[in-house]
Structure formats: structure tokens, C-alpha cells
Image (tube, rainbow over all chains, first blue to last red):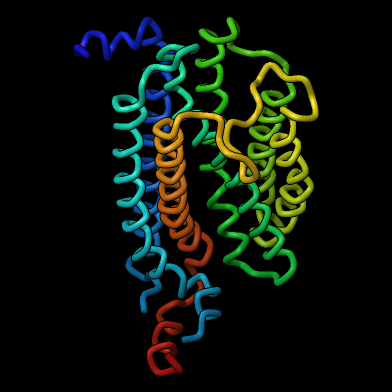
Length: 52
Length: 247
């Protein structure tokens, strides 16, 4: 199978890659947003975090 | 070891921080294997051609959308019954990820429906009940946002989430109860799956990846929520007590 064939997905490239891209983008965005939220919460806590 | 110790948000916070990277790592490994099988190793489907490869993400997202709602409802029940703060925080942390997977199930389903059924959307029982699930997640989050006092928000949103849980069995059985455009289940606990072993393997690997990802992201989000809600709880004293105490 060539790269061009792989990308074309038998003519369904838009639908297949669209689905995978939507999932990848959504998950990447969620990771960025959640990490930023935790970082902001840690800054606001000013080093006073629970640790044991 | 006293496990109830971890029911306290301050005790759970560092534990969640230690666990999240392991679940995130497991998600990456399973996703890499699942993507390889789904996109490369699995053969072309005889009737649907390459379009069927969408199911590897679609089924994982759809399963997670329902499963996360059940877990959210479980934590809501625990928070109501035992007045448990951490349980309410877990429910709060699960909702955005559940909504995300519900939206992805709808989007990938539409992208699968267009080439196979000829339409992005139909008001069929499976799709409509999945759309209602998305609105339930939105409603849960909006209700939380609308109430300033966190403990009152916990209780009100928990009741909403528990009432909405009736929608999950409706989604699950919709393909049996109604004559839907959406196909019936290819995988069930009671009968052999009606699909090739390699396709099933890819699907299960992607589902496991989605599972571990959901755990990792929820643990990370719940840490942020614990800090946001309990900033003024005086952990310094609490941690000092624990160090002297019964650990």
C-alpha cells in the first residue's frame, strides 16, 4: 500500500481522517485546557498544596 | 492502611497526582496499538470499504460517553447519600470529558453516516438519545455554574444527573426497541461478536485507551477542582496532623 493510497482511504479520506482529526484535536485541546487549569489553581494556592 | 483516608480531598490530591501519569502512559500505549491495528493492520471491510475504520474511534467515544455518565451518576449518588465532598468533585471532574466523548461520538457518527447511509444526521432513536445525553451533560454543568454555593450546586446537580441516568439504558437498548437507521450491536456480553477478530481487537484497544485517558484527565481535573474549592481549608495543619497520626 502506498502513502497516497493510505491517505485516500479508498475515496473515504475526508470522512476517515476527519473523524480521527476531530478526536485528536478534541483530546489535545482538553489536555491543554486541563493542565492550564491545574497550573492556575496551583498558582492561586500559592504553594499551599496538600501533600503527604 | 485506612482507605477512607483517601475520601478526604486533601489526601486524595497527592494520590491523584501520582496516579494520573501512569494512566496517561497506558492510554498512549493502547492508543498507539489500537491506531496501528485500526488504520494499518485491519483489512478493508467487504461492504463498507475503508469508511468502516471510523468505528475504531466512534465506538470508543460512544461507549465512553455512556460509561462516564454512569460513573458520574454513581458519584452523584455517593455524594448525596454520604454528603461526601470528594464524590461530588469527582462527578464535577467527569462531566466535561463525558460531554467531549458524547460530542465526538456524534461527530464521528455523522462522518460515518454520510458515506454509508447517505446522510450526516437522522432523527433516529439511537442518535436522538445520544444527543439528549450531550444536553444532559451540558445541563449538569450549567446547573453547577448557576449555583454559587458549591455544596448546594453539588446537591442540585446530583439530582439532575441521577434523573438523567434513565437515558443511558434508553441509548443502549434503542437499537432493539425501535427500528433505527443505526445498526444493532456487533459486540455484546451475551453472544459472540459478529466481526473479524482483528477488527474487534482494534476496537477494544481503542476503548481501553479511551478508558485510561478518561481516568488520567479526570484525576488531573479533580486536582484542579480540589485546589479551587478547598484553597482555604488549611492543609498545612492537616498534613502536619497526618504526619504525627496513625499512618
